[in-house]
Image 1 (cartoon, helix red, strand yellow):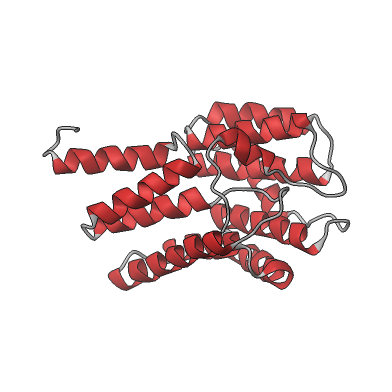
Image 2: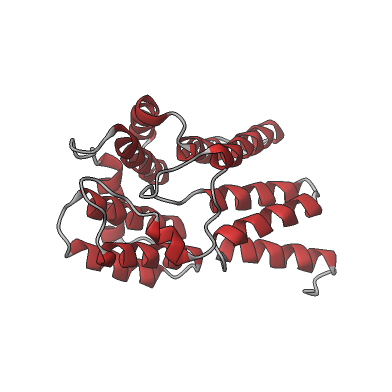
Length: 240
């Protein structure tokens, strides 16, 4: 069973490694990217990305530079430079010196960026290459769930997305990552499952998913906002 991460610093410590472990500076900037995304502070991500630009092009720097581009785009409001960063992430081919597992991580990230950028062909290409190298990586299924969410919002599609997200969470539960693997995606899957449960009127189930998400990413703004919305709905518009 994978040990839950309970602090952003711990999330950064599960950083991305290639030939050597990431430096303390890279890990600090990775933590800032996590913080900026989960706290919905795009300027924090922008500052981290600018700092990563000054650290060269080693595999771990490239990974977190691209990760910053993904997270910034997911918060919305990208300018031209942000859009270019996202496209660069989507088109990135992993450096050849990475092993299969880490190459899979890089391809998953490229697929995620392609999904947000609306490049379906590149997304499917990157996902296929990720599967070839590490089919157990739960973030592969997460990106697939994101893609399903963009295909429609009918009841059948919503049920299929929920089933996919449930499989993602189960895959995270069963996954045993290496110490240097990146650590993102599970809190997002849990929060998306909570939102789906709310739509079905399953407030207790939704609350459980939210609490699990917050154990992984304390102060995750999307999870907190969903919890507040649930409380307001239960009290007739008055937050509990």
